[in-house]
Length: 275
Image 1 (cartoon, rainbow, N blue to C red):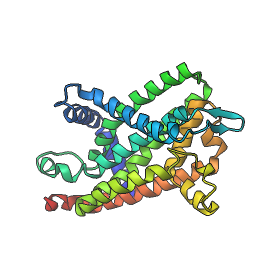
Image 2 (spheres, rainbow, N blue to C red):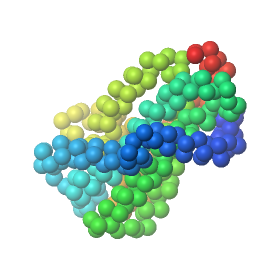
Image 3 (cartoon, one colour):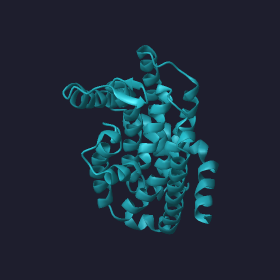
């Protein structure tokens, strides 16, 4: 617990530095492109159109029931979950290599190493907020108007960020010691797209034994994705109605964060040795 408190203090005490570094990270990543940061929107937009074409148009997907008696077209259902998935995927992938890719810089700088995964996540967080704003505009045109349930988006954005940081804190430490972890992670996450409820409702996977569907629903990402959809489609207060799931989710986040903090503090004094 002491390690977790130490890491939290480092985030709060260096919050201004995290914001500055995250903006620099976002700009430097796209400085050699003519369109610059516009690609941060173009790339996910192209991806969601491809998945919609493959899994929606070619397979002639019927509308998805998001609530008893409430159906939405597959494209909007996919978009509501995909914007969260792409934020998680990019943040986790880049966050996993955030420390070992900056070891030479770290040897010359004087700030806590625990803020490195955080500012990498923040650099993707700005894009996520932009994508969320675009999605909301699209939904207004489609007839899914802003409603009281949108307030829970604040909670789910915070929950998503907390989960990503907890996971990234673990993976960035392990991948600094064992570089192969990053390559394994990339393949695993791409496969995880098909088992997290982004491309199809897990409830319709009736060909699988029910126990497999139940295990897939234990994925914390499924909780977040369904929460986003409940907010954007205005169906229910998802985190209250499913309060047992909420408790489970935060238990996972807390365990991951405590474990990641202990792991990070134990090994970070030796990170420079892995240069």
